[in-house]
Length: 307
Image (cartoon, rainbow, N blue to C red):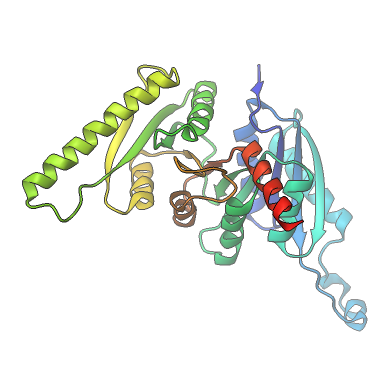
């Protein structure tokens, strides 16, 4: 039996390249256990207005017509999702990819965007980073070398209420696919102006102990499983790098985290930690969770200011 989906309406961005098949196959695997209401396949092409004389002379060099592209993407979708695929709609558009995908995410009330992540294409990855930062919904990044199996899930936490969303989702997913779930917390390092190395070690140990006490309080406050464990690491100003290192070291197949931490009033824009992790990570699937209701409230507030 499939679980109630956290993401009812899913947008999958495809560019017609070699990464499309991986994105769709991973999407099918990731969404397999959920009752997704509808999926939208979005493809955006730039409008290349060539002189009619060239169009007549070189017809075979033109991009496929819209109906051919829709047919191609639909075939890829069916091959990846199988006979029990959720309802799907193919949307082919012209223009700038960032603008069109962001616009469609609002129009179609999207809960989750799924985007590819190239190893080398800087422009492609920049569009994805901007969509993660400015988009109104959660975003899943699928690197081109992703493995279609999730055995280890890593959840970075700061013990805030906003982080509970990512932890709850990761816990449910881990139970559904029988994966191991590990949490990690980066506690602040001691100030570098202390009198001696022994004092610094003492302060660091106190900070670590305080973080462990926060973790126990966090579990009790939100009635989490008592045997849920968290690893603690000193943050020496390299939090995203340390998080990614630990994810690779433990063999994480998926990182799940919230877009904002303790100080977020709305999750419409990424926090500095999440933004840097998106930029650095090109190998591990990464799910950035956003509180959709807060995002919509944020946009309504902006509209009120502009009107």
